[in-house]
Image (cartoon, rainbow, N blue to C red):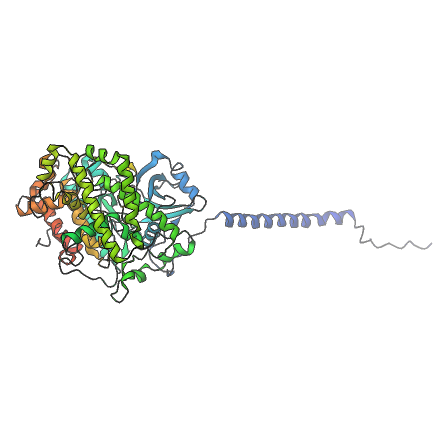
Length: 582
Ligand SMILES: Nc1ncnc2c1ncn2[C@@H]1O[C@H](COP(=O)(O)OP(=O)(O)OP(=O)(O)O)[C@@H](O)[C@H]1O
């Protein structure tokens, strides 16, 4: 019987044992696939959610020392400030409102939000960012920007700073009257801190001119250590600076006519804005000043007059923006006309409330602003007429004043000690204020307290703040900007610190009138050798000698000619008693 051949096992039908053996590799492959898919998805998710670091600034090298300012997302800052809650509002500047915030890391910050349509805003934003990289952690007496954010949808630009617990010096000294600042040693320390902060800026390889030194730009930490803030108007020192060595060369000299004219020009801020408005919002335009302000800022004598006049950020021109600028200037002049009246609140408000006079003012201002289209001769003629108008306005106001106030006014002594008569020189009274650039809330208490919370910026001009700005800084041909501008402003700040008064302050009593202009009063006291009269009576544990020394240093800083002012290094030396006061 033939034996049945043993059929070979068909490959299609493996034995049960063999099928069972192949299952684990298949499962492993599926699991491996799932795992790699998971990894890929995780990596993608991480990439998508990770915040991109800001691009390095132009010209930055990999080894550039200070880290660039951080970019925050808008939502982070919104969360940090509880949706920019009014309860977190710290103050208001020309740029916009500033809010207190706490980041998720627990870090306390101050967030500055640029108002959409702010004239100053965008240029200042760029400027602050430009200096942020340069100044981060560079000095204990400087508050640089630590980050920024922008929200395209809401057209908002935001800057983030380290929070300074005791706010600004202006507020702490003059509004809140913090007890800590009633201690002489603390005030003196603030004076030295500020001087060191400015000296640090001036001592950089390319010196930085702050351009807006004033008490509201000095911030105080929890121990009342002072730091310089707000680099919106800062600039790198021009390579060629024309130093004024002759009186009248741009330091505000010249005859009364010229002075009056220049006062009106500077007071309106018109010339500043005429250079071209704040840049537009396209990225290219925004990038321009960030690239290299140093190269544009130089004011070499070879350049044309027109280009000499331009600050580096005023590069863009657009008619639409011009319209906005004019509107702004008109509003501003209007408010200045109201603010600058020398006497008490009552006649000022009476005057400003009259509807017809408002209309008249507005017409005249329109007219004044139309000067830019006029020829030089016509401009001169109109300027003369505007001058007349300002005088008329003032005389009208004066005639409304009570007899008593007239008497007080006639007692006012001018800067050089000459007694002014009530009619002819009455305009000088408040023009003196304007000459000293006295229209900010930093300086004006004529109309009562104008605290930050009113929402009024203290920098109405892009050339610093009235009262604090050096005469040459406000000059139309602004090619004389040097560190000495900051020295002048520091001199005013020092007087404010020692006296506890604003640079321009009027309360109405006869004795007060002579002290209304802090700088003039200090000079007068110096002539009488009674500087101690200027020292704040409320100061505790006063070191009289040191306080008088501070006033002397301040007067050195306030010299009209920049070359006559000391450097900040010398100022620190004088304050510390290492250098004698000339
Ligand atoms: N880092 C900060 N910490 C605490 N408060 C701050 C800080 N930065 C600004 N502030 C507050 O917000 C206010 C407004 O600041 P901002 O720098 O915008 O305006 P300003 O310098 O006072 O005015 P301007 O911009 O017209 O010169 C300050 O006066 C200060 O009280």
